Length: 491
Image (cartoon, rainbow, N blue to C red; front, top):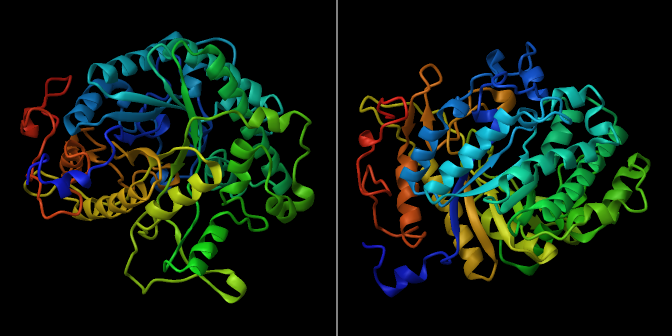
């Protein structure tokens, strides 16, 4: 079946402006942790501490994207990515977090942006993806009231250098994670287990940092910026289309539980609506930080899109009195390595609920599935479950778009297998397999399949059409013809 097939096929295509992308973060792929003037981050200190990460693994080398970015951009082009979301390492730019600029660090991102643009790939820059400078952590980190201004200074340096070519900006990635996991449970860097009042204070400072960063981007950008951020897309979906179940799922999506920061509204209401939600103020009570008279004006800056990282959601029905009641699937029916449960319905209901509440276009800034695949005897990496996972989710996203949800694009997590935080290298999310001994890259079957999806603009999702087993977007060449910058085959 051709991409330009019958009318029903064309009707199933995504909007012409829809962007197909993939994503990564600096600490997870760059390596070169102490190279060319980069300062340490909290993740360097955390992962180098025995017992913190699976098998004592670190991001010291990771995928060596710092040294192999040209090869990686060539792979992105081979897949046909239209956009690439990546983060900038704060301590690679400012080794002490503030003050002296490391020009070699800035030059790296300068080259990366140019390489992406040369291949027609739009850069989407995330300013903070968890790798807080260790030097600033030693000055109090997010608990220091100066931390929002530190982040604004860093933002200015990056925007001054890259904004003549970069227009898409995100301030913070998943504040629920780096605040809760990093400062409450201690499961992630910097590994703190603080009382709730201090955790909420750190979160409030992070939200202020977001607001000052947005102000800085808009004031300093050399080209018209489009600004958002990328919180966790946490929520519920209804198990039936009954009004009662839909309302229960909506209520569950925007609810807040006492003591838990795993929610949407505590983080997103201040950013988009200019206030903390009443339910949160009641749930956290005396632990809520003191809010300055201008704080909400600073946090609530005009944004251009609602970025969200959606992996899963809770199947929900209306219980007694309409109370959200989460149901359980039969054992073994939807379980995956990560997310813990495959819930493609999340891609229909969460964008719908978020757009109804926050009234902005949606960008799916992360979505993916972890497996533990390896090269087969034929030299290829077969990952049919990942293909099935992505297709199920994208079919639900297409349904949401057809029902009126404005979705800007989709970024698969991740372009490369990488360092998966406290799990080390035990979880593989990538479209590209990375051999961590040789750093050899191999595009997986899912990468070939995704290339075919991009080429058809999603029109053939759910159809009986089958992509060629080694489909490649660019020029129809087989992948062994792709040569990396070292002159060796990349697969």
